[in-house]
Image (cartoon, rainbow, N blue to C red; front, side):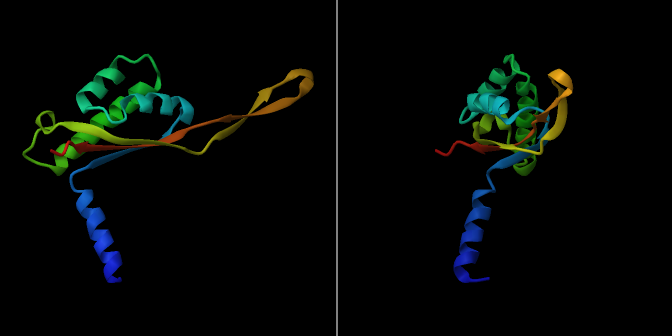
Length: 132
């Protein structure tokens, strides 16, 4: 490995030491619906984001709430001896990508059938501490 490449890799590793990541794969909700809920919590403190998700009426909010709790517990596992309440955690980024869609047939008039794609998504959530 070249020197420049090694320095860049070391810088990426050092930046990832303070953050905690959680992934959610193949959620049977359309990516658009999940993005609408993800936009509500992007850049918000963890406690406030949990409150938003807990009292949201959207179906996707339950999945995102579980994912956020998982990311917080991942952060606690990474930083033993520190409490998440006192660390000032916030949602650094939420990324929603399209996953594989199930192709189904929908009955149509006059004996025909229309194709329907049941969409699903992948979600990545990163939690970080506020730097002074």
